[in-house]
Amino acid sequence: DWSSDVCSSDLARATAAGDPGHGRLVGTVAHRVLEQWEFSRPAEEMLELIVPAVRATVSAGQEDLHQMLAESVADILKPFVRSDAYATLAGATILGREVPFMMPWGDGQVLEGVIDVICRSGDRVWITDYKTDAVTAEEAPVRAERYRTQTSLYAGAAADRKSTRLNSSHT
View 1 (cartoon, rainbow, N blue to C red):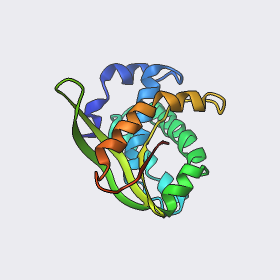
View 2 (view 1 turned 180 degrees about the vertical axis):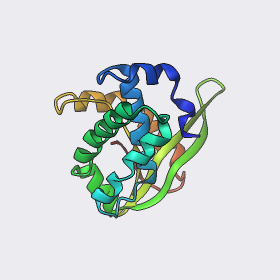
View 3 (view 1 turned 90 degrees about the vertical axis):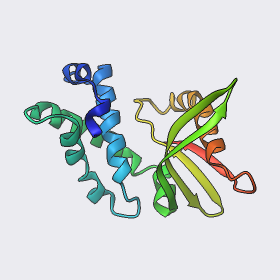
View 4 (view 1 turned 45 degrees about the vertical axis):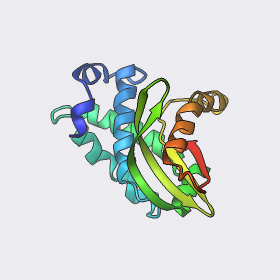
């Protein structure tokens, strides 16, 4: 159920772009679109997944919100399809999507998560985690550093302990 992680307070606040509720909904819809995205297909075709994902996330009767969310998600995905990360994904072999994992972590704790995409490009396997934060080009390196621990843990969770060399990225 796609709408289970979108709370009603997010819907109530999401009418204002820049509001945390709006950002949460945009991230939820963008992630759902990317779950279905076929990177080898023309990006224009894949952008058509946005409106159905919005409709599946936000109930009917909120057309203004639907339109605002669809535009916000498109604003995120259009630059993404022109990025180096997208080019890597488009030329890669997708090994897994939405891959759940559990691994020991810390003092008797268990780390549980879901890896967005595992793919092979050339002789390397990449762990990709989608991020929809609004950042400038100048802020990107600092923001990427904030996610380094997460992607390193994901790479460790997915690594074949024998020989696979994994790379992590946040897209």
